[in-house]
Image (cartoon, rainbow, N blue to C red; front, side):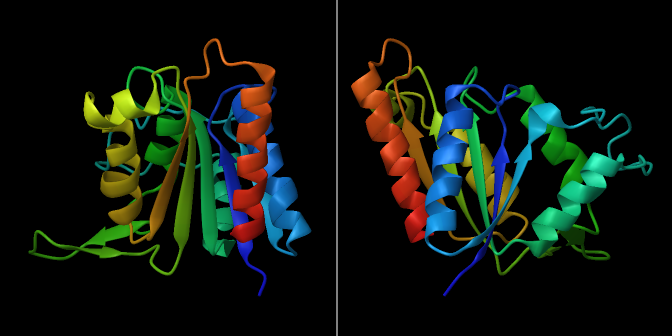
Length: 192
């Protein structure tokens, strides 16, 4: 059974190793008969700053309107991005701040501390690169970037399950290791 899969490349540069991972995933997903779309954050035209929080409505640029439409369309969302300073790049965070808005991604309940998760019914996979060894990021740093994306963003909005796959350390990795990671990304796409 095919799925509608959205791949969001959160690295500012499409020709990065994250870009290669995203392309490999897309190839695998297409080969398995899935419908796919790609959003490359670095190619979008938008202000990544949510200037007044939720106090006022900040008009969405056309690329962000298209981003919301793609998220609405998707059954499975794949984020591909590097860990920089323990978390996602600022541009990806800006995209999330501007797109995952109240009324679209979640809705606070009147007079309550609880909220409705408006993106329920979707799953996600995070394909994350890092220069830190993944075991060190997990056990010493306690995965701040993974927890932020998985728990406090995606699951908060109802997207689950969220699977995380870490690739690293990228720095000083050889071609053989990178080809293995690309093959893994392709296999994830085929099994989506």
